[in-house]
Length: 83
Image (cartoon, rainbow, N blue to C red):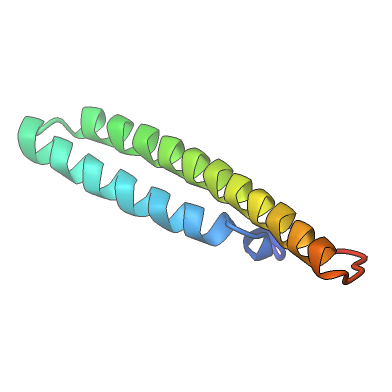
């Protein structure tokens, strides 16, 4: 099931951004508050938010780029099946 999970476009970078942001934020909250449960909750929340946001943004940018590439190839007179 997870064999092709990270082969999807944008999935790997989204997880890496999420892990970095969640870990950094969780540690920062722990340093300021010294509350383990609060810092873990904040870290998981930030991980989820960053992962979802970066994945959606990456897929949106990828879609826009494919549209531009397709339009460019149409203007050049090159036929394409899939870009």
